[in-house]
Each structure stands twice: as structure tokens, then as C-alpha cells.
Image (cartoon, rainbow, N blue to C red; front, top):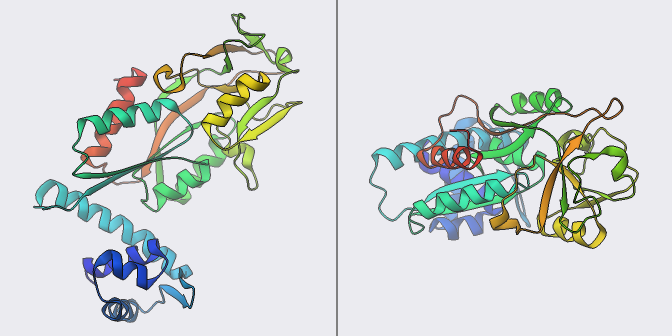
Length: 306
């Protein structure tokens, strides 16, 4: 097995066909096919299910690609540090819950690097997809939070995917609304005061979705709820319907604008408060790349936790 074969297999899995992969890799398709047959024979597994519509990974193939990405990622890190890369672009990607501070820190990172040398990606996604991205090394870093309510389940999921959670900051719960909201002048907001307004949340889907929710206090019963899939829609619903969401209170006005505020949530006996532990996930026992560490430094700088 060679690094070249590992790269070929990763590219085929990403492109979904030998034909597309051969175009990306600048290699004749028969040569690519033969190389994969030799790899499968050596490993004594079938990596790809082949059909007229393309290829999909077998069960063994999914396991292999996961290890292959990890191995090739380490190789790229070594080449970035010690090798002569020529014109090969380095890659760096982040997957995150819908946090404007994560995007702002990404912006500051990109400003410090030569975009001609890097291929950057930032993805605002569902919690499960963030975990999948980092597990498969589609992203080096994932940004999410743990709380008293979700930490047991999410910690189990992270361990099963060989991921580690690194806490950056602990936050109280805040009610996030627009400045024209009827409750905007309150110094704090009780749960009962929110009853007539829709609670907004990012759609997660799947079973156990409340444990994967981006919003804190998802175990409460909200009489009115609306789900959205992107941050722009969420902000529009705040203005159009006086909606609210429950968050960390960390607002980036530069990206979200100055029309939104975060007011402390006031807990009571029936609706106790909770802490959000915001942090990043990465592959267990794997050092961050130099760019990954720079991104974490930007996060810490923005969150004032250096």
C-alpha cells in the first residue's frame, strides 16, 4: 500500500466515481481502476461498491477511508512542515454550529495567510454532521457546546468517533432577540415572559435531536416553536415574528449587525438555568496542524480566554 493509493481511494470516495476521480487526479481511468484492484487485493477487503451510477463505500470501505484520511492528513502536516510542496495547495476546514464568533475568527485567520497557498472551507452545519466531518477529517476542527443536559450523550458519541472535546469558555444562558422586541428593555427575562413569542431553533433532525440542539435549555416545553436551517433566516424570524432563541450571549455585531441583543435568562425553580461549555472537537491523540492551532488562537483571542 502506498500513499498514492491512499490518495486515490480518498479522492474516489469524495468524487463518487472513478471517472470523476481520474479527472481530478490527472490519471487515466484504467490505471486508477487497476491501482484500486491491487489495493483491495492487498488488504483483502472490498472498498467500493461499483455500479453504473458510480461507486459507494462498503462497510469495510468506510472504516478504511476513515483511517486513510487520518494517515494522509498526518502526511500532509509533515509535508507542510518539512517538505517542498511546490504549488500544492494546503487545505484547512472548520465545521461549526451557527456561531458568528467562529466565522469571525475564521475571517481573521484567513487574513493572516496567503489564500493562494491554501484551500479554505468553513461549514455551518447540524451537530451530527459536525461530528461526522471531524471524524472523517473533512474538517480538522468542529465547534460545538456541551451542557448538563447533553454532555452525557454527546461525550459518548464523541468517544465512539475517537474525538476529544476541548473547552474554550463557559457561558450562562441568554435570550437572543432583536432590539425592537417587546422584551428588549428587560434587564433579565423569565421563561413565563416568553410564552407568547415563538422559540426559534436550528433544525437537527433524526432521533434524539434535542440532545444535538444548538440552543441551550432544550429540555423545557415551549408552547410555540419554529425551526430554521440557516442563520440569516433565524435573524429574519426574530424581527418578523418577535421570535427568540436561547444562546451563549456572545454576539458578533460585525457579522450579524447591531439590531440584536442578548438578555440574561432568569432561572426559577421550575425552569433552572444551565451552563454552556463552548469548545472545539478534534481527532483524539492527533496534534493540530499549525493552521489549526492559529485558528484556535483566534478563537481564544475573540473570546478573551488567552
